[in-house]
Amino acid sequence: MSEKKRIHFIGIGGVGMSGLALIMHSLGYEISGCDIAKSKYTKLLEKKGIKVYYEHSPSHLDSIDIVVYSSAIPPENPELLKAKELGIWVIPRAQMLSEVMNAYPKSIVVAGSHGKTTTTSMISEVLIKLEKNPTVIVGGIINNFKTHSLLGEREFLVAEADESDGSFLCYSPYIEVITNIDKEHLDFYADFNAVKRAFINFIKRCSPNGKVILCGDDQGVREILQDISGPFLLYGFSENNHLIGKIVKDSAYPRVEVYYLDELLGTFQLSVPGKHNALNALAAIGVSLILNLPITEVIKILENFRGVERRLDFKGIWKGAILLDDYAHHPTEIRATLSTVKEVYPDKKLILIFQPHRYTRMKALWDEFLFVLKEPEILILTDIYPASEKPIPGISGFTFFESIKNLRTPNLTFYGESFEEILNLLEKIGGENQIILTMGAGNIYKLHKMILIKENEERSKNVA
Image (cartoon, rainbow, N blue to C red; front, side, top):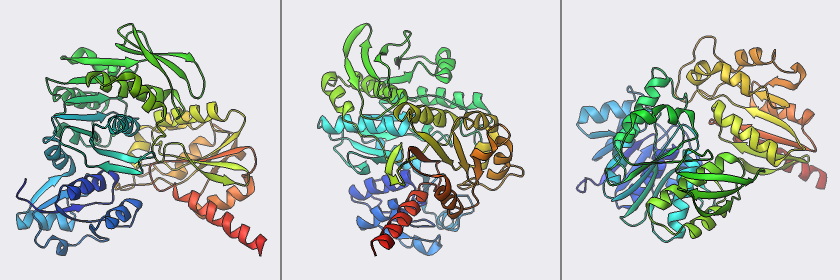
């Protein structure tokens, strides 16, 4: 690949694509890309001098050597079709990342249905602060570093794997971390058994010199243990793991003693809340054990980890209510986030504004969504954010609202056709002693900006 100099990314605005584009740019390649709209990621690319087009056109392919495309790009994309017609080397993002990964003897790849961005970020932060100079490609902005990609030296690479389309099977890492295996991406996989088979195949690709680290508390992981071999390390809270976290103080920010094969390694209490984050920290400690890092220092670094953007992000105060934002979009993630919010803010009423993500996910997990979304005191639903999907008859935000309002208190369950309608509703019901939590993997985070702009306008009028 060294003779190739000009690389064009189709769908460059995504978090994974933009991170890889920044790494390739830092390696000295001439990078361009296209997407349908501006985002914080495209703005970051443009600041680095990368040309971004906000349309898809074959004219972008002049003198291009390699075209990299996102899994969200459909086969009929005009640039993709033209690149193939011109005989340009066309590869998916995962294959390009694999090409980069091959240059690093100690690559660490994190996979799993939930928690992989935070776990990848924790591992990255440990290596960065221990001055190991890793190359990092993660699916979210690490709050302590304000970036999602970093070019380091040629020993360690830390990356987040995407199992959604099976592309994680392109990698052969030195260390693999699997946080959990859940009923997810059933638009691509035939059923849950197919999901589990993909993870088994991913495990088989791990370097024989490395190790696989798995969450032994997860049901999906336990269901595949009999089908895997080779060196692996199990972590979790239960006694049947190799690396065990014992909660000695149960709270929103649990205090956890860490044991490896009955030896006490230390105790941590994170700055980010929730038992799920304590599990993520155990995974990072597992990686550190394999790499022979000083665990006492690792624990100190993890205690100062400040999380990842869009993971229970504090956005401000409005009418006395605390504004939070979270990326959760699967019932398992929603359950973990709601539990954490309840632990951190036990005396506050929760208003959850949930934007469903993808028609296929809602169809496959309809009953699970109904069950978990019964919990919040006040629920506001939006229509489904489609991502790249076409509508499915009978599956919409409103039909889900019609189903769930019969399971909840009707006057505490709402549906908003638009963000403006939701904002008007919040004007009526929002106020003191509340948490207003936006949740979803789409564009629901933009609602906070509208709320705070409105507040500033009202404040300006009052001053005038």
